[in-house]
Image (tube, rainbow, N blue to C red):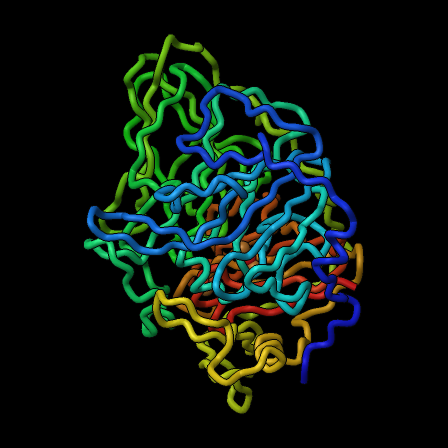
Length: 506
Ligand code: C2O
Ligand code: CU
């Protein structure tokens, strides 16, 4: 059965564009790298942007040029800059409008990860909008309620499109400047690029049924272990976004020089009630972690961060102190104000169960030709695309029509759960597998309640729950945003092969 679009009418691009939204790109999009340190980008009120997805050539290694897929601010496409992520900036509580154009050889959509926006702007193909075909545009417009570090990525043929490079940062600035000396956003991701600079197969089918396929080339905003500068003795906001398709990062600060300190101040855009000294922070795919770095006093002293989730750790980024000391002290309280997230009413909350497992029950099979390796509540929602290599592919199986692809992708569209508007729910998330799964929920904020694992930040707000092997965690959700919202593992191979479903808020 074809998924019913009623209630979520597909709005054509023309309808939206006829709304006559004025779009300006100047000064609202920063594609430059390294990021501006200490400076402030001049921005017009009512931030807007125009950008596109496009193929761009890039050489990771001399003598070898490959084609990446990249989001670029319109007019800013310079060859050789493909892996440096575009950075969009919006302001909390201010309308944001972005005109997106697809210059890829296949359809795509843009999902604004972590934003609590109207469902029609959520960028899930067939569920919230029709795919944006090659050459077409779609206008995304919303008012972000929360400040913080967010990102955008496609939600169609996700494994191929994300692996090939499509992702960008969205910084939603606080209504009031929190007063850092520098703000450094970094998009962390690996690439399936071999030592000769050539694409490897994006997926190893066997690994898909395990932790996922890892990329051997590690980058921070397109560079391998970049060295950036920051004001000596200054307070730096280091925004880390894990945009990798597979890898869970465990970030540590290497031995700190005199005067330096590092605190975790926000997760998934939401401030911690109290800043915590950085120990070893697990950041799953899709998640963000904002660090407050107090730079060393002495110019030339360095603060380095490493990933320790692999048996051979590597440096992610290094900050070098520069200039005369700003002599800043670490603030006693979190310099970031809390976001306006509804308080859960735990006393009246209803519990809902979500079981994350391998495969589907006997007798039930995936709606596509692709095998379902993973499931939620023993049901699988599979992205029905061929995903084998780095060559562009149409997001349909050979011989499949558009309508068939839609039906295959959405199944019969039955939600995993239906939530009554404005009620509080306790989601019991149980991982029945020996692998971790970063479980992401669109459109709603989740608040950590309890877990079988130690070290959960109770009360912390986020959009992704990093479920360890066999872990059972309970999170509270206030169903205050109506719509059909995806829930899925953000290890994209798991998402693409079944660990995905819909939570409906009526
Ligand atoms: Cu980054 Cu469906 O999400
Ligand atoms: Cu997973």
